[in-house]
Image (tube, rainbow, N blue to C red):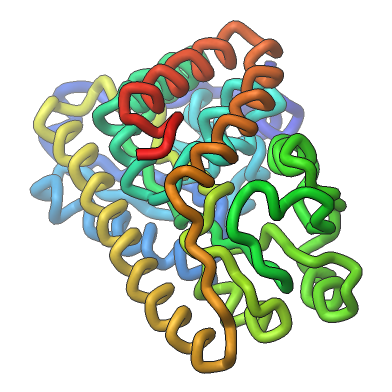
Length: 341
C-alpha cells in the first residue's frame, strides 16, 4: 500500500514506461538521495550522476535530488516503484519496517572488517541477486551498491578484544547494534549524536558507536577518548543504487552494463577517498596522543559469532530475513570469516 504522500503525488496518472524507440534519444531520469545536498557523500554521488551521460554515450542522464526533495527518505522505495521517482541512492536499512530482511542485509553488524569484504559479497557472493529478490516485488531493480565506510569505534579505555567489552558503558543506537553489544556483555545506552561528545567528556559513557575515523577525528572525539579501535569491527551500512524496474528493463543491455560498472567504479573511488582521509586522520590523532587499537582476526571472529546470534533472532522475523541470514552466513563461512584466519 502506498502511503498518503505518495498517493497524493500520483494524482491521476500512471508513469510512462520507456520504450525501445525512446532509447534513440537521451533518457532523463530523476533519482533522490537519502543525503542532504551539503554532505560529502551526496557530492560524490552527484558526480556519479552528472557523469552518467558520458558513461552511457549520451543515452541516459540522471538528475540527483537531495533527501526530502520529492518524498520522505523512508518513502523512496514506494516512490520509485510507482514511477514518482525514477531511482534512489539510499541506505537500505530505512525500509526495515517493511521487512526485517532490509535491515539485516543493509548492516549485518559485525560481519565486515573492511569495505572490500562487503563489496565482494555484493558483487560476487550473491548479495546483488539477494537484493533484487527483496526490492523487485516493490517494482524496483537494484543495480549496484557502495558504502560510506566501516565505522571506527570511539573509546576512552583500551579495548584489545571482545572480553574488554564486558561492562563497558557505551553509546549505541537502538536496534541490532545495541542488541549485539549487549550480547557481548557491554552496557549500551541510546543517546543522540549531539550528546556523544559531552557524554564521553563527562564519563557518562566510556565508548561510542559514532562514525568513520576521520569524522570522529574532526569532531574531536579522539582527543577526549584516546583509545579508538581502527579499523572498526561493527557497523558498515549498504548504500543501494536502484531504479524503477520497468524503466530498467527498457534500457538496452549495454546501458544496463555501463550503469552497473559505473557503480562498481564509484564504490572503489569512495573507498579510496575514505582510506586517504582516515590515514591522515590517524596520523593526526596519534600526534595528539591517541593510541590506535587494531583487533586481531581472532577477536573480530569472536565478535562476529556473538553478532550472528542476534542476526538469527532477526532472521526469524520473516522468510526473506531468513534467506538473508542463510546466504550471509554461508558466504562468511566460505570466506573463512567465521574463524580467525
